[in-house]
Image (cartoon, rainbow over all chains, first blue to last red):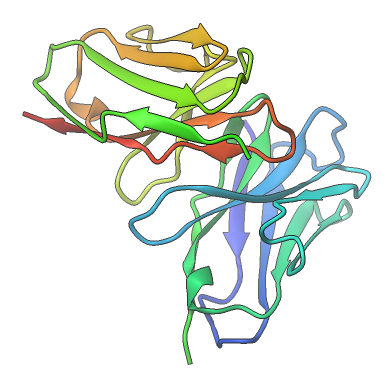
Length: 117
Length: 108
């Protein structure tokens, strides 16, 4: 059974860059069967898709975040990563990584990232 | 962007009762709709994909129906662990997936 685990700093200063990594076990980011995605959830609010990456490195981003987001994959480490530039307090959220298979069928436990000075 | 509107915002029921949750899309998503359950402090869990297919390990009391713009999640007989938040999500408009705002299912 595939498992995903987010890791990264829990506190980021305004205007700086948020960086999170998702480590996949029990499955491979090199699989051509799935996309791998990032989703976020501000405290007490709903869910927002940030973007996706495929094993070949092709990416697709939410248009509202596209100018600030980069998602990359490291097949040798079986990981994929999220970079979000120029963060503000509005980017404070729990960030989830997930596998997309006609719906997000596997999720990490989530990483709370707070943007504050 | 496809907007998903869930109703009601909150549903108050008792264990053993039947729950019916609705999700309406601003344009057709065919059958590309998923449902998730989220308990406090946990990640969402996929319940239903493609409008009516149960995900692996999901009890048979959960069922989904609908196509086009109107969808329903039904829980036939509520168990105590079913009281949680429920979200719908369209996976039709790739890659601009969107979620509904959620329905809170609470104990009456």
